[in-house]
Length: 299
Picture 1 (spheres, rainbow, N blue to C red):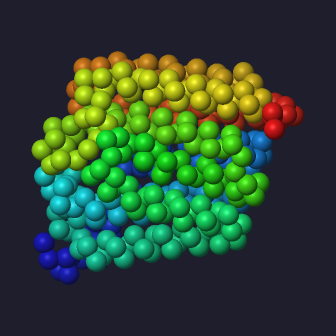
Picture 2: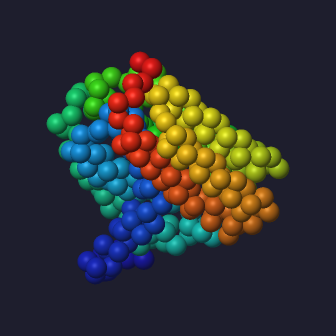
């Protein structure tokens, strides 16, 4: 396709699809752990200016990550049924445009954190390097979803650094919980593309786990919830927080009913439904801090 002949409106539409703004699930899966970090690090009373910085930064960096992911995967995406019509794979956007767009989005995200402590800058650079290198992890790592979990959870240490000037051990444990969650939901996502991934040679957790894929997903959900329960105990959280974890466990069991037959449509439905799992955990956390503001954590 000749990209120079399309109208501005068409070009913006292609950019929107390239940034996945038409599919906000990725933004939400990145946002929920960031909000967990903001609330835990501030004992339930985060600076609202910081909240807006992190929310906008989440949108910008997820968009930049999607653009670079499609740039790195453009030759693979042409051979996958679900991705062959993405703007880069279809030739609707040039590689030069994509790299420029990713750079602009990244610079805008960096502009948001300029007023924040230098430690946040350092972690932001690490997060950027992880996001840029993630597409290539799928060529080499047996479970690249764990790498994705680090990328999607790096808002947690950044939140601690922004509000406390340091990242305590419990902040890294909270990041670990997100790694388990990411392996669970992105394995569900990978189960959708299993046949195509075999053909093109991409490594995914769905292929690595093989016939144990469903069991692995449920084990990762259990590890995530157990880790979050430990974080809650360490931070002296109350019944509302654990109620949120209980609802999340029920949602995880519902996901089992969707993925156990390994139907592609149902697996994708389970992946999308993870938004609600992350949401109930955050709601339980926020309500618990609201109703139990004076409880002191074990620090």
